[in-house]
Image (spheres, rainbow, N blue to C red):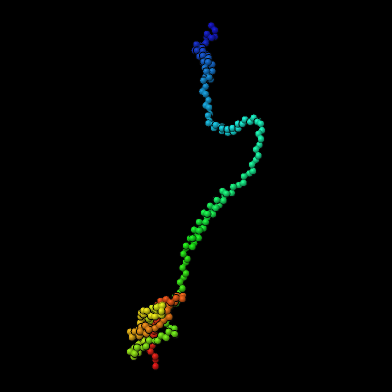
Length: 216
């Protein structure tokens, strides 16, 4: 009996299994390689290239005219003179349009009322002129005996003729007898009328009349 026959059977089984595994591995390795999963691809968006400007259209070639027999040239006319008649009415129309505006301005300026001149000052009436010869009022005898004194102020409206038109007692002398004597005397006085420029006008004037006793 050989040594192989002497070996245990279980060892032969292991060797046979190892050979089978090697054969199976050699059989499935290429297939595994052939079924390897595909690698992932990177994808990115690319902007489309800018469209090139359209080429300018070529001008169409015009047909060359067939030379014909030369015709006799006409004699050139003299250049026409510029017509100035059309411009003249335009200028006249502008002048005509400007003329009413100037007339309107002149009319407005003439129609504007002139500022009134300041009135001349009024000179008040006078009663103390020497040529008037206005007498002083007489001293009332009873007022003299009673020793009454005072000053009465009268307000007199003088007419343009220089006459007293109205007389009012503005301030009393403190005695009715002295007041009445002053009023009675002024009723017969003459005045220099008030004047505004060269014109005599009516105006008011205040006339003071004092009553004083002479001391002995």
